[in-house]
Length: 324
Ligand code: ADP
Ligand code: MG
View 1 (cartoon, helix red, strand yellow):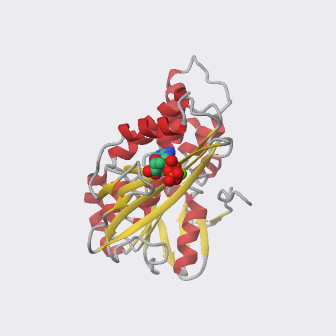
View 2: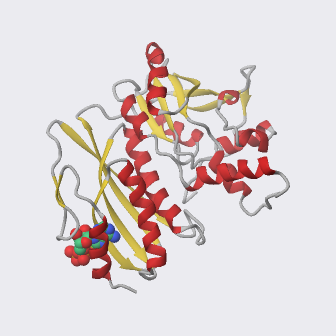
View 3: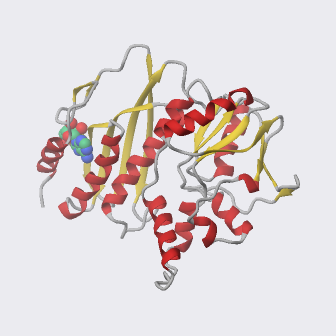
């Protein structure tokens, strides 16, 4: 088992030099050179074993998801990822666990040109914290408080896959049904390795009025945009996009709605003035993700679900709250 310093030396050797990094891993602190005229966007997310992921999760998936959830927060601000620091608390420096964890994390971080520039390594119950730094032209961030009455509400990708994977966990996979098995594998993949919508967030700068990533569930997260913008949202339940993996597995519409509001999707939800809707086809193509109009914002408060006839649908779930 390597000691802390051997571990840090090995980590340093794995990390490449990157733009804006004057001094990376190895000193008391990193030196970064922000670009003139830009703002720094800083976010931090922690993953605790047994809370955010089961203990038997493959370490490469744990590392990947840690990078993904932080990149998703940068995406929701419209930021371009730049740098990150990693606080690692581990019961031991077992290379069989730590090496694949770093491989998963660095694979996604490097794919988005986000350089690891520092961190901390301590012994304790398995807990991982990534602080991610992004940048954008000053004044162009996608905030939660910028939506206006009359804006359309959009979501990227599909909703409910991660919640479905969680719900299916522990249920037996019927090996006789090849298609069902494939669908479950796809759902598991969406839970274990969500795709942060970084290119979409960047493309929405100067286009969307407000944006948030859906980590706690659509109703809860859109509720933040509503509260901070002083508006109400009316969402058509039937308009919520579902994946081809989810549709055949969950035939009951109300059950499906519960999953689609369930969270952990890491899609972006944004408010768009209607005159800019014609811009979205090109943005969706460029960002390689479908975009779906799911409702509108207007005066009032809260998130209201309606059915195809305009009747109010009782929400089947609340969002995730660690202390709720
Ligand atoms: P200090 O005692 O000054 O806090 P450390 O021994 O904790 O220094 O860290 C030495 C160097 O290694 C620092 O540059 C730190 O940022 C880096 N480092 C330590 N742990 C990690 C980690 N888990 N990931 C990335 N860099 C790390
Ligand atoms: Mg330290």
